[in-house]
Length: 247
Image (cartoon, rainbow, N blue to C red; front, side, top):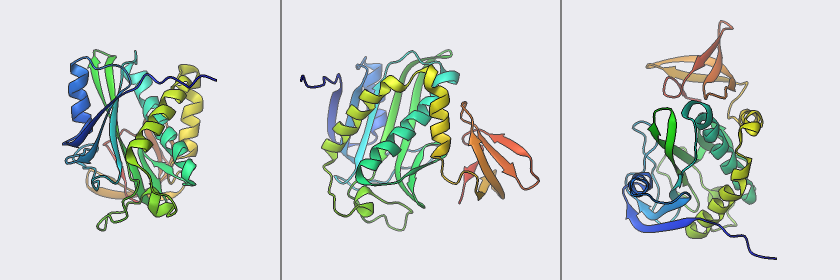
């Protein structure tokens, strides 16, 4: 049986400000589809907004990869976010880790974060010229200085993971599974995302414009909006960055 051929190109750096920033530069310089940038030490890893991804050097997976696909921004990108989140949750089961997605795309184990995702797009009108998917996954780190975070090793102490091998394995997993990312599967992806959503159908605390309120997550729509039932029984839709889940 012939070995599977993966058309994935890896670019390794000992230290970077941000893997997303570096691969964006390479994308502008016409890097190929499925190019991957990863580093041993990321100094200014970014999350959404002003958030930063804090990662101990040489202990975790910090990488970004490039997709050159004919996505339509409004139709495809919210589902892509769901798909990537779900695939990370699925991949973590290899280490007996039961994770969930904290809307929109943080990956949590119980009350602790194990992975973050940052998706950026270069648009031409409503069409996507290219997409960058940045991922940080805590592998071997065991100290987080009071931050609510965990790692594969903390959840499964019997394992110690080599970051380079982990990145290669998860990228090949994404590559193999990408065949499932088709419009005919969007309903299925959306349903699976909601089934794996942290605190769905539970009373939770949210914050909007500095004010906290109680509500229940009922679902996330295919356009990425979260539907929350408030205390008066009404259903309200919120876009990403309009609201945050506190606990």
